[in-house]
Image 1 (cartoon, rainbow, N blue to C red):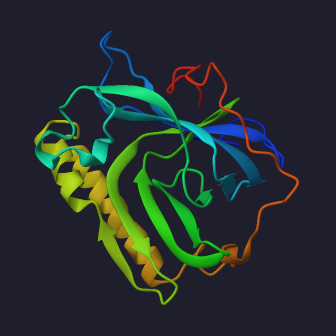
Image 2 (image 1 turned 30 degrees about the vertical axis):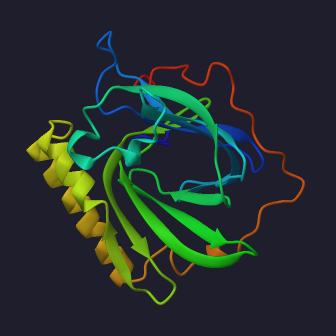
Image 3 (image 1 turned 90 degrees about the vertical axis):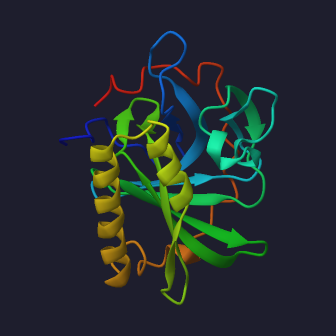
Length: 226
């Protein structure tokens, strides 16, 4: 294995962490993880990593200093207002996440109650870095929703622009992210994998237990493993 995919393969049913680095250093000037989601491995091959985030999973996420959800903050100050990191539960239905090595996005599948498939969600992000306990990435703000009729639309373009205005993303990086988004759109229009692969018919093994969030969820600096 090469590039960003050098650790041993995980087996179906293994529990790993799916983490995202913060967009700005912490008070000590170091990189840090501010989103951590325990997930169950569905499939791990040279072509794809598929994981399941079960309903009710305990996760880590950023909130405003007073505990208010980040997205309730006005956009103008959303990325500059003081924050803290808290533990919380994933609400709603579970999410299936699919990622190909070296590709700067992952594809998430969402279902309504009763397993009626709703949509795919293309999350633009850094190609995942594998380490012994999971994968690390950095979210790139810009996203794409894709629907069963093959229609699609951009998501969070306002957040993408605001991140640039407040200096969380350089013009060069923003250009690369937009290029990645255009490449994702080309894959959608061509209906390339994983969209025609039937993942919307997948269901989790009923014997799987919900992964636990470990106390040392922030272990291993995000950029050390490769």
